[in-house]
Image (cartoon, rainbow, N blue to C red; front, side, top):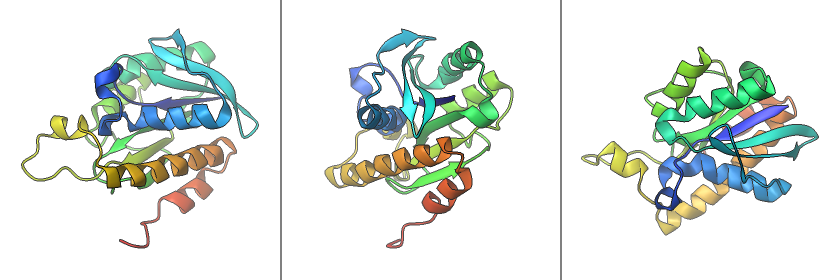
Length: 192
């Protein structure tokens, strides 16, 4: 069984912001696989279903980004999964171009407070993750204002493609094809 957690902030005001791309990918997975993510458990919205022949639990922590680890730890403990192999965390990354992906089996928080909190609650940084690029913060912009901002029309199109690629990456990872997912989606886009 896989726990697939997309990070974001609850409430309407954060919908569609850069910081909520994890939630947006979970929504894509939910649509594609007809998994209803509305059950309230473990301080999260969760949904159970199947992806690529594997049982999955889709998770949208409702603890706000910086406390994501509290919710994810609760889900992991309840379903007794191994976070090193059976957890996939999807979140925003400002060091990647808009809609670009970077897939890793482990790594540091890289300044991302949601990931920092997950590492603290799991007691380690070995867990698969899919970073979805939201573009670099423009100079003189406040980081919080930037990640809580919305995408332009052009960026929305790039993000839509990024979300579709993230869904395909999840399909590969749950099919035990982590290195294939990394080989496919960690490449720079050709037009850069």
